[in-house]
Amino acid sequence: MNNDLDWGNLSFGYIPTDYNVRCYFRDGKWGEIEVSQSEEINLHIAATCLHYGQEIFEGLKAFRGKDGKIRVFRLEENARRIQESAKGILMEPLPEEKFREMVLKVVKLNERFVPPYGSGASLYIRPLELGISAQVGVKPATEYVFMILVTPVGPYFKTGFKPTNICIMRQYDRVAPNGTGLWKVGGNYAASLTAGEHAHELGYSAVLYLDPKEKK
Image (tube, rainbow, N blue to C red; front, side, top):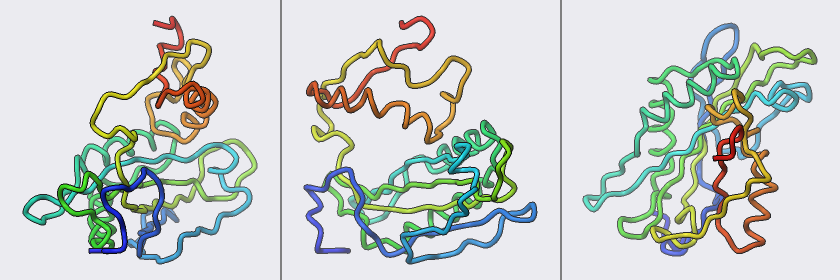
């Protein structure tokens, strides 16, 4: 256990941990899981994730139970959802068993960062996949990297498990009808930044987006 952290007052932000895990798709197959202590990655300046938005991610959590055991919430559901996101923008889906192995490995490697039971905090697990092959034409990458980082976090909203104020903003859409709204791609979040900042300025914690076609 990392005793240097104030577990009961963590924000939902990034705190460095000991390790992350990575796996590369090259020559038509996924490689072995690699363990890294680096917080950086090397990317080609023409990587498809930088130019054409081939980037997907997930978010799940690990909790320490009253019995001291660490449990990951809905691991399989997150594995399936990131596969659907990959298929949605023509990326190579990571097999569910490989996803499970990577999640359990990165949690075990960073076990000292899993908050104690009753603290209200958790270990946030962020899997992400990037298209990394160098291309100028608009087409799917041939190479991908799948990575998982972890960081201890407090509640997503400052109020924790209590009511929080959100607002409806009809002047903004987060996704287009028949667009990428079904999938957890970075571009959907870029589309939410302006409305999100406006909401925070007005004293709200988040924006409730309406159906972009009928605004209902």
